[in-house]
Length: 231
Length: 263
Image (cartoon, rainbow over all chains, first blue to last red; front, side):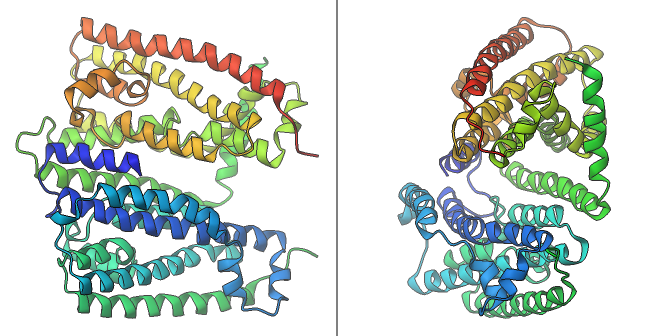
């Protein structure tokens, strides 16, 4: 996190604003980006990597026989909240301290809606990464798909590329088609009153609902083609 | 050390990649995604600068080169260090230790093989960068390769450091991540070196970090071998040799303390 702050400070020694964002606004963007990254990487990606291994080793059989929703189980199989908080909290505190909040135009309603959008975006992101994991059921491999999905998600809407920096075409792509912008870029834009909060909340709910539905649908189809490898 | 042993290892790991054609496509796409979005970010930054020291062509060339160099010398993802670290974790290193091969040589060959496609893409990126922003003279091209050797030496020791640490510590992921982020920023890989404040540039140029990426890029604009170029080369070379010596000792030290957990 410290490196990110140094990065932004170096950039802002050379410019006054980035796509209409000040230093503190970009730091707020980074705060949400860190939140997304920690949740996704510490909970879900570890479990999705384990899912890939389970499919090829046949260990998935054991999961399918458990009296629990299999998708829920594979998503939350390893959940080490203490470790996650240990890593997450210092980073968030550091960036929160560094931001000069007086320089930001934040209202309570935008903050609440922005935070809800951030959570919806994380759910969307989990669905996207699950979709990138599922090819393992058909092909037996998926590593490059998972890497591609994560790189695209990270590069398009989390590595300091704010929502206003995307052109109209890419705004549609990264909001609806490959919704990587919701969790950080759109949430920040809403908190800073750069986008209409109600319209963005509505779009985020629809898109997230669709991607969760799609991932559940494809999970069901994937299970149908699953051949146990354990016997 | 019998060199011919390592060629089949490179070939095997290179061909292994082609077993999964769709993975290959995804891998290539990922490479371009990385570069395109990095460029998108910096082109927006450049719109906000009144008198940029680089024009857009130079910027494009800079990031093509920085991405390619960091991939070739493995300073970005420390693939060699990671291969050793993973092998220590899953016990795979035990089967290599009992074989009559040089452990580092073996892991370097296998990593080189599995990065074959990435290296091809990186070489193409370098060629593209040189077409977009041609080097000042033939001397600058020769200097580029000389500086690339320094970059390789330093990045190699950096990788071995990660691998050697994993032999004595159970978990080195945190240290690796910290070093990785510092290197990406300070080597000039994600931010053009000219963006740093002057005093910081001067301090950093005395360390081995910029020699891994910025060093080779910086000499492409040189038309002759100046005192500054020689000084910059010597700093990188001395760091490379010194680190190689230290890391060799550290590797031997770590290997002696390695407590195998495999079967």
